[in-house]
Length: 469
Image (cartoon, rainbow, N blue to C red; front, side, top):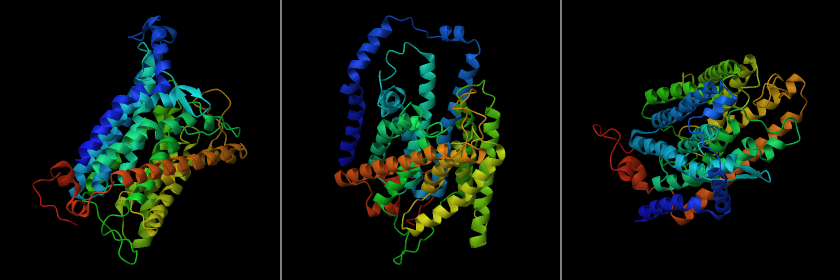
């Protein structure tokens, strides 16, 4: 019965969100104003202003499709690193991230992120794209921001895997897409206060090491702490026990899908097909991933004398996460250095987090949270002064190692502190409140037998007997 109540509340919240008083008056006036304008449903007026704009639209949309396909990559990585008895549950969570994220971000999240700035804190204006009169530029921007929002929410699922109630997951996913991601996104990408810091060019994050990955990773850390570890993860003396995932094959497939999707994630963030910097960004993205994977593999080998391919996968992802913030502003050699450090950080972080008694089944906090922060800091060190803030014109972003002084680094460190504090603080509060009100963890029997049967009515592998381990 409690689950039905929670789901009903979820649906009600989706229905009443558009009626929030803070936006009602502005939406009405915007619609009235738009009625006096001429719609541009085919983009004719937009093409008349710039005949080459069609190339940019195709470029950004295709990159957006790649980012959306990264949902499949996350689903495969998480399922592969977790046990077979929870595979269906993980598929459902990754699906619902995009389902709920699409609806909530459309209703109000996009307005909070990209609406007219209010005091540097949040955006305001029409909701649900009302009054846009088929503004094709607005629709393009909405879709791009949507796929990034869904990615941030999906990251959390790995950190709380195998013991979080599905109903609790739906609520947290809604809240991340409703205000946690959009608010911080506005501070950086919507003209908010972080983008206007007086140091350097303000806080910079080219494609989302902070806005997407640090937010998702640190929110996930809060969830993992509130939930507590899975049964059997730690012995009575606190020693961490390995809980192997059921399919390294799925984890490999997911890693390659994510690596492929990142060629949309980063180069697409130019938001302009005419910026041939996209070639530089693609190479930087690839080199950081390769460097991260190699270092992670070697470090674990030196420690265990085993070639741990699972850690190599996370090393690749760590390199991708870290290079996401600086990818547009750095040379290829710097991307390799950033990836090398990311590969080391993910290994150190995984062992450190386990040593603290925190259970992160897929390493989401280490991959996304820790290396998202490293990526932000690297902008203040390696930005080479040849590219602006998504612009071919000066001023150009310049880091400490290229004579830019310490200003940009200060802005980056401030952004790191704000991203980590905002995501962890809101995450801890949300999970704690949900836990007090409804309980967020499945009962011991359900956890031991697997969430698939109890939460979803069937196993992902019905032909095989799934153990309780």
